[in-house]
Length: 326
Image 1 (cartoon, rainbow, N blue to C red):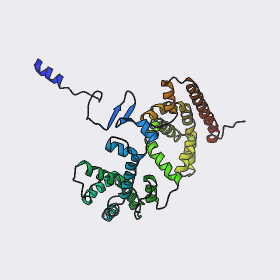
Image 2 (image 1 turned 45 degrees about the vertical axis):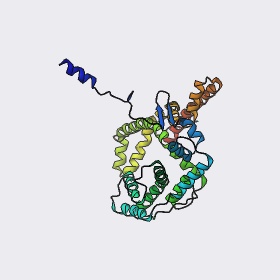
Image 3 (image 1 turned 60 degrees about the horizontal axis):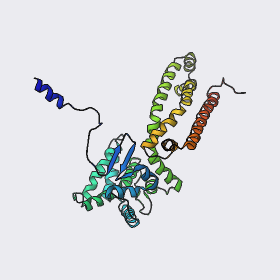
Image 4 (image 1 turned 120 degrees about the vertical axis):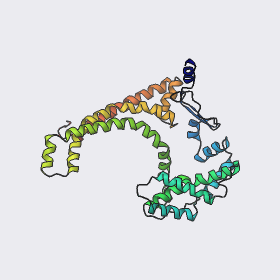
């Protein structure tokens, strides 16, 4: 019996992932305690600020950054591979026309990628050179597939890509059917890298704000003035908007008072996602004991908090007509 207990104790499964080796990889390394993400021996902070998308792709595939000639060749190969076979275009149009309207785009994307294997003679070749060529074609065709699916599900004909354009500009062109200006292409490139950091930073505050609005609105909808408005025949949407203005006063107070939380959360978010900003500057200055920069940062943060509270006070008068500032 004792041996059985010892055996069971020795085979117990450890909870969590601390100290658990999931796989061995020479491509990347994640150090959660130091907040470091390494690609092929290079810190992601350096890659995010000094390298392009194509350079990082070459780094992941080859273990080193490309030379100028190698980078030009990769860009040329990506541009030459972005077009889709006409059979795949017809597949996308037929699929979007016949499947339910609520289908998941990721399911459709996975189906199209699987179908592309039938048009790639090297899809079963597992040699390194063939794998690089297949990966190049897939990397180039992802934006084309996504743009074609979006247009097909909106009853529009897919637009073929222009090989002379970069990835962001080409995607907007295939999506909208017209050439975007440089600002739109730049915004798309920035938004692509900003989506996850913004979501992580806002999701906690969004949950709190949503609960406050829901609780306050449920209480306000039972008030006498709401019953009177409904009795007079006002549309429900107008009644809710009228009640929402009264609910937003305490919600606005909480949002203004938690402005400092956004700035403190930006430190962690910017470090994890390698996004240059005030948070990373504050942390790097703290580690380097750069006191003049720290003093300037603290003054700027204090000014931001004071400004947020001032805007909150001014917004009170906008929401509540009973409040007037002389």
